[in-house]
Image 1: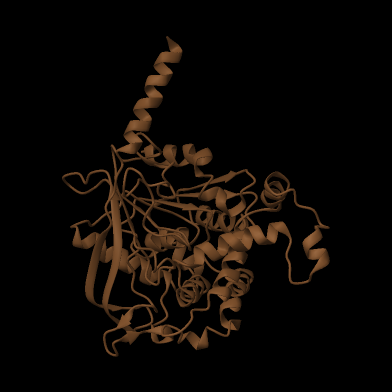
Image 2: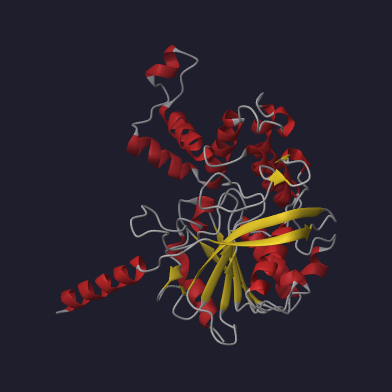
Length: 391
């Protein structure tokens, strides 16, 4: 009897999950003024939502996406899609972010990395500049995390939304989440920062620059003017190789090497020919090259710069910025994170406690490093569920 009941509950859960089909929407504005005072004309971004908006529009959770991500946070576009949105384990009927209770919305960032993905809608360096009829290239204004937040705010306001039950995001999304809580404290009741940071310190800014360097060294980059010729895909792939390894751990790579390809330090091909690579390098490169086909090198540079420029509040005093926060806050950090290391979340949490703010910190374990907050999130969902249920 217990087995039958368990099987029935499992089937119902799978059926509910299968019904979470989503449609990409588009939002446009004629002019958008950046934090730096520049104007971008004809801005269009994509967004999608899950669940139903209640009558007083008080059940909204905004999910802000990570560096290589987009607004596809959960569900599928078609029932036969091979993969669901990146936080599908977290968002859906009965899940930690429960779409039976909440209206969940996510927005594609400006200069979104996946600009050539048919399901991504974004304005960035690869877009046509209406003043010239040609792609912007590096004439596109520098954009910041505040700009991503302000575009999201415009999308929400177009739907008549004036408050957020919570804003939740991983990695670069965590920067947007805390920026929301600082820039618009009256809007935000709860803020969840997953594998995140409240500022790009000197170490992180230098670290991120390594992601940009391979693109700038690719001969096809041509100072960003490659849209009528060959794109710098080798440089972009090299950047994605770095990003992937930085986001994972030695334990993960060693498991892949021993489990999938029988890796050895003295493999025959790289021993015989300097032009050949080890199996683990080929594995990493092949995945990066595949991902690069839907991405744009200039967009990566702009996202790197947005992260490098980030400090909550976009001022020069982090304590002053954090003191503006009225939301209850939760910081979820991964002990094995080698990218945005745990000290980022711990320091911000400590500062908020010193300011007598309502802040919680959860440190999770696992071998996925930074990606504990993305692909490993199901194992750590309970802390988010509890935080959203607390009064």
